[in-house]
Length: 61
Image 1 (cartoon, one colour):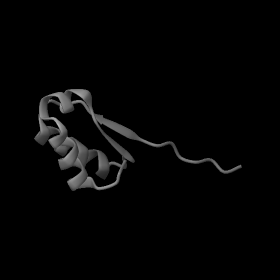
Image 2 (cartoon, helix red, strand yellow; image 1 turned 30 degrees about the horizontal axis):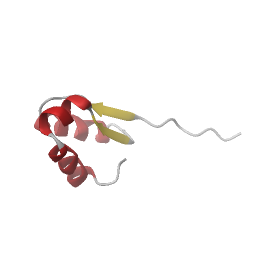
Image 3 (cartoon, helix red, strand yellow; image 1 turned 90 degrees about the vertical axis):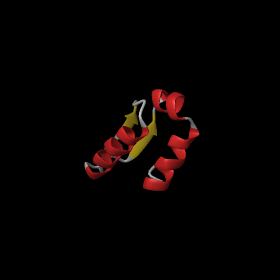
């Protein structure tokens, strides 16, 4: 039987984009598979947050 490793998803529930980007970098370095722009981040920074995350991390889901 082959076991797959679980997927690690990190939600960026920050209100500040620079803090969210720093946390995302640490999460990716630590092995995170998915990075989620959390609701507080979207409410405070809008879709610019998603664009910046996409630019920094590409298709990490």
